Length: 142
Image (cartoon, rainbow, N blue to C red; front, side):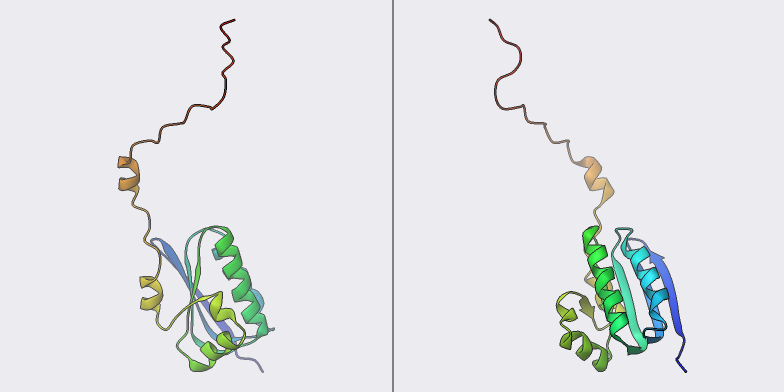
């Protein structure tokens, strides 16, 4: 019998944390994949905390890789929290440690997030001038 997979999602200002506990295998990955893809599609940085995952199979690796690609396509990132040596070794053996941004703790993952742009600084910035078109204009003086 397979252990159940427990998934939790918490939105924070500027990022979202998804936590998983249990086994991520072919039988449980569908729920995780759906959550990851939905969250990765909103353009906010995403942290996947896998510290309480007891098994990570090929289907789970694929879900993480797909979510990382989806997040990157929307200008965001996926950071994976895992301190378990077995999980880190698996990510290294598969090469996913080069694609996924790994952190040993949730605090380390949060610290590594890019600083959110300050809306007040953006509002204080003067507008950029629009360059004039190069080439002749349509007002011929002939």
